[in-house]
Image 1: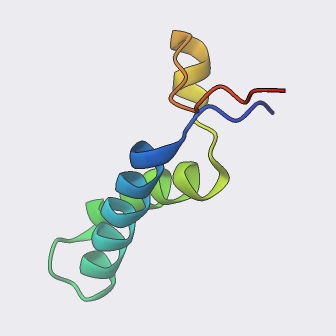
Image 2: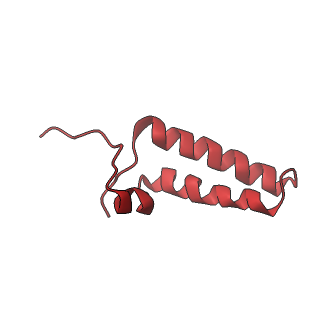
Length: 64
């Protein structure tokens, strides 16, 4: 599994995912809020399967 989510993208995924999950847990936005687990997990693991399919990568290039 090659990392393909980095920097600001990762932070935004985690923040939005947490917000959706918390609001769903509190009953403010309903069951659909649990979809926030997807961006939360993709941000936590720095890997997005959709990015792989689309050939995208937001991770910075590591210099040797």
